[in-house]
Image 1 (spheres, one colour):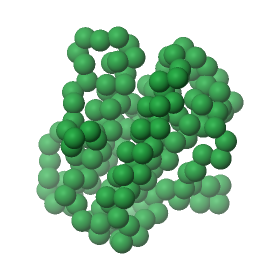
Image 2: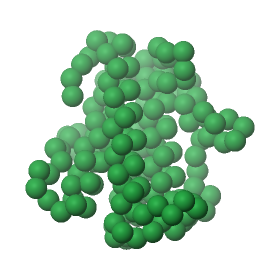
Image 3: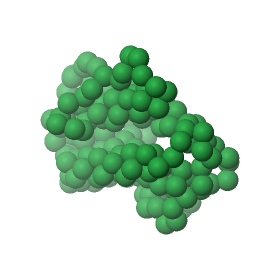
Image 4: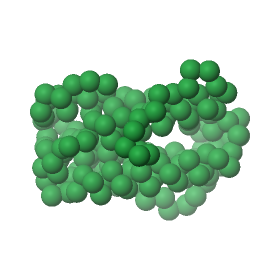
Length: 166
């Protein structure tokens, strides 16, 4: 999150600027929702599932890598925490996992995603995967994915310490 600020998406811009503006807005919202939490609170399970603030940050980091580096760019061996044996691996965190390091890893993944995206047009087909998506499809999917998890983070934050807001 650049300079610790969240910038509203542009109200009048090209399609690409609008889409990337919304994605960056939600990426910054991840930071906003995690700000000020201790490592223990970020890893605290409040639901029957493995969903935690730290787990959601890890998940979003992995999906950034998967969709931009693997699917759009066709890179091989992109690291993710889930596997066939442990499909929820990215949600597994310890109480001692550093939220600051997890957020830094997320920022790194987002930066790499921006670098990949800069090399492609929205209508370009993805080079990886086998489902035939376009770069535009991935960008819209990542807006949906990130925004949905921002809603989860919002609820978790309210349950943790009562903090609410956008």
